[in-house]
Image (cartoon, rainbow, N blue to C red):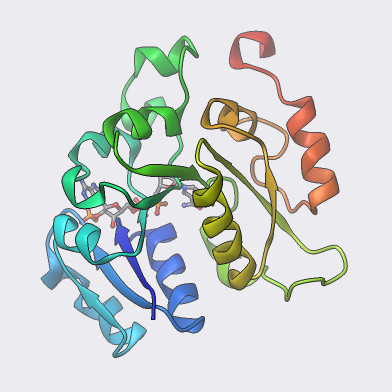
Length: 216
Ligand SMILES: NC(=O)c1ccc[n+]([C@@H]2O[C@H](COP(=O)([O-])OP(=O)(O)OC[C@H]3O[C@@H](n4cnc5c(N)ncnc54)[C@H](OP(=O)(O)O)[C@@H]3O)[C@@H](O)[C@H]2O)c1
């Protein structure tokens, strides 16, 4: 039995929890306001789900998802995530997150920021470019014709294989865009960000992506 830990239980976190439960995982969910505020979601998810604080969810997870407003990424507990595969779903919205200079000047990327915070973890960027609602409605079995595909990026090959298997179980193909620093190719406002794409279409979108500075 594998346990999925979730730091963040909003639109994306709750949907990933539903998919994990549907695929036989246990889940430990957490948010900023405390486990007691997640009792409704835990009741919906059933006996394989529980709520905890972020450090406890991080410790319990074999794989842990960080899915919160990016402005709060530095609160993600570091030590309980050491050595673990950590999935980063986050995007940068300055209106919500405030300005982060190194993202504004594109000297780094969202998932590299999280990796720099979680030095001893293996961060894989995933689930950042589809609407939360689609997670539970757009999945199809492996080898389905025209299956929807999702982008992953990461610096650790084994971690990416782990996440590829998880995404496959959840109903989607994957396209590996390369190391974390290539994650900008699927950031907000790029062609692949949002629409339904199969793997072939997504590769074309990634190749056509432009930096913010080149969009003006
Ligand atoms: N919504 C989408 O369709 C979508 C799609 C792809 C990617 N994303 C990205 O994925 C991330 C999550 O999006 P979302 O739509 O799920 O956000 P959301 O609905 O606003 O949920 C955010 C969750 O994070 C929790 N949280 C906030 N600060 C926290 C902290 N310091 N420690 C632990 N938990 C904390 C919140 O808990 P409290 O309510 O207790 O504060 C809430 O459960 C964002 O970066 C977003 O840009 C979203």
